[in-house]
Image (cartoon, rainbow, N blue to C red; front, side, top):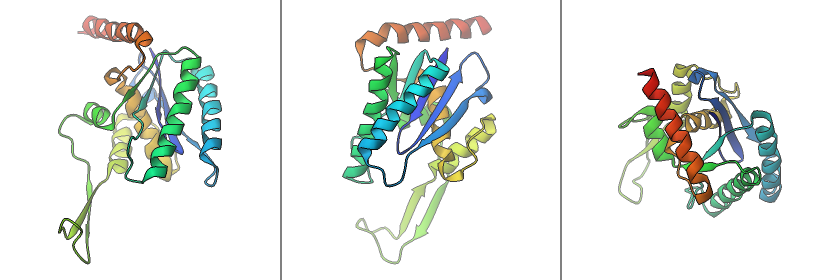
Length: 205
C-alpha cells in the first residue's frame, strides 16, 4: 500500500511510505513558500506541489494532520492552516484518492507509544504568569520527532529548522490506520486497506 502524508503549514512536511517496505525506506521532505507571500499564493502553490507529488508517487491513500481549528499562534495561524489544508484536500479529491486526517494526539500515541513524554525545556520567569507559575514548561516535540526518526533510520532533510516537519509527516504516514474518514465515499476503500493490513499481519504471525 502506498501512503502519501502531509504535516501541513507554510513549511509543510510530506512523506511517502510503501508499507510493503521497511519504515527506514520512507521518503520525506518539506514544501516551503516565500516568507512574505500571501496565503492565497501559498494555497495556489500548495495545490500545484501536491499535484506533482501525486503524479510522482501515485498513492493509494493520503493522510494529513487535522487542521487547526484554534491556534495558539492566533487568528492568522488558524486561517493559514485551514486554507492550506483545503488546498491539499481539494487537490487530492480531484484525483479521486481516498483521504483522511489524524490528530496530533492520535499519531503521537501510535508512533511513540502510549504514555510517552517528550523532553521538556523549563524556563524561570522573572515574575509569575497569570496562573501564578514561576516557570514556563515547554514540550520539545520537534526534538522528539527528530530523535525518533533517527532511531528508526528515517532520513530527514539536512536543514534543521524544518527537519521536524518532514519527520512528523513520516510519523503520520506510519500511523495511517488511525485516520478519520470524512467523506463517506472513501469508507469502503479505507476498510479494505485495513483488512489487507490485518490479513498480512495474520499471515506473518
